[in-house]
Structure formats: structure tokens, C-alpha cells
Image 1: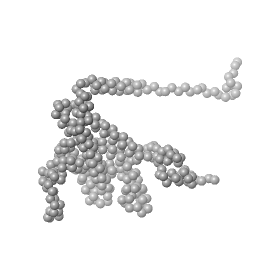
Image 2: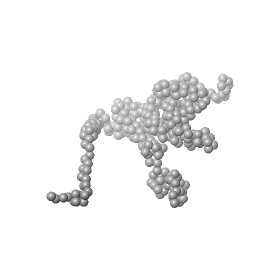
Image 3: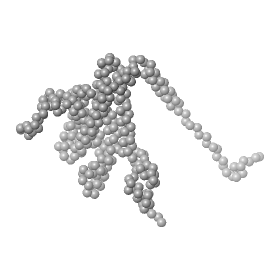
Length: 328
């Protein structure tokens, strides 16, 4: 009887494990379905003559359309800047110990979240009818300077302020949740070091809250971009949606001009989404498995550390992990 090498040596020779990947037919089926649907969409876009892609390409670079893109970006950026500043103020007021400021903030949020933005824009457009003139002076007393409301409060300003005031009500709740998500011990430790409340908010609480604030704020910015299409209620007639609708009604081709507006909105939204991604990556360092360090000369952490920290680590005078005890 013959013996194997393993038996002669007294060793057990384990059989090799031949692993096979798990078959997932659902992935193949879903990919096939998506491919068929995508092919159908592309086919209808290319073969349907009613889209009039020649007209789309012609008016995609039209001067009125490009000007509408500029005004849309201006309204979006301006209203978001005002809304962020006002929302942070409202969030701080909601967290205040003063009941007056808390109630003022709550009533503001209740009103602007409870009424449609279109209705608010109509109201701001009719402000000149409600108050034909504005004045500066002593309350219930003499007026020193008097302005005509329509001269001071133009349609552009009405659209900008109307969008900003409405957006601030939503952003304030985002900011309040972000600020409330920071460990209170952080602020208590800063107070123990003698830091002022404003400094604590700016240097300790707000930087940590940005990880929670940035994603929904980015979504609100993209939403604001599309909400600018409602400024016709003011009426403001220079935004992208009104410009494309006006051209489409003039040449009796509304569908190609709607495609022009959709393409421009998609391009701008894509750029905003890329910016949002990098902001989330920046403020999310060290959280949820995100890498807190980058590759660099100081043990692969050069990008995440400042120049002073890099120099200290490069000098070799400190341990990589300060919590490890030194053993000679």
C-alpha cells in the first residue's frame, strides 16, 4: 500500500479552498433594464423632431439667455449670503436665555415657513402700493428724509430680499440643529479658559457644527437656484426662466426654449454639487470614517497639519502618538 508524503510526515494536508464569487443575477437584470431605458431616452431625444435641437443650440448662447443666467446666479448668491447671515442670527436667538429673542425668532420662522414663497414675492412686489413712500425720522414724530418706495425698492431688490427672508427661516432651523449637535462640554471648556461667548461660537462651536450644516445648506442653495424662477411674481423679468419663456412665446417654440433653460440649470447645479462635495469633504475630516490626514512629509500627515506642526514633527522632538508612554 502506497503512502502519501503527508502521511509519511505525519502532517495533514488541507484541501485548497476554491472560492467562487456569489452569483447575483439581479445586478445583471437591473443593468439590462437600465440600459434599455437609457437607450430609449437617448433614441427619443435624437429622433423626435419636436425638440428642435438646432433651435436649442442657437438660443443656448443667446445674449438674453446668458444675461438671464447671470441674473439667476446673482439672485441665488445674494439671497443666500443674506439668508445665511440672518439664519445664523435667528439660530443664536432661538438658543438664547432671553425669552423675548426666542419668541421673536420663533414668530419669524413660523410666519415665513407658513406662507408660500410666491405669495411673499407678490407682497414685496406690491410694497410700493401698500407704502407709497418711506421715511427716516423719529418714531411717531417728525420725518427727516422721505423716499419714494418704487425708486428705492426696485424689482431686483424686492426679488433679492423676498428670496432671502424666506430662505432664512429654513436655514435657521438647519443652523440650530447643527449648533445643538456640538457637545456642550466644548463650550464649557472654552469658558473655563476665559474665552468670550462670541469667540467660543466662532472658534469652537461653529467649526464643529459645519459638518452638519454644510450638506443641507448646499441642498438649499441648489433649491434656491430653481426658486429664482418664481421672481416673476414681483415682477422681475430678467431671470433665466422668464428670458427663455419670452423667447419661446415670441417664436412659438416653447419646447426648445424649455430645453435651453433645463440645460443651463443642470450645468449650474452640477457645478454647485461639485463645490458642495468638496466642502463636505473638508468639514467632514475625521468623522464617519473620512480620512483626517493626507499624505505628506510628516508621516503621511502633511496636508492635514499646519506648517508649524509639520516642522515640529519633522524635527523628531515629539512622539507620533502623545498618549504612548516612553519605554527606554
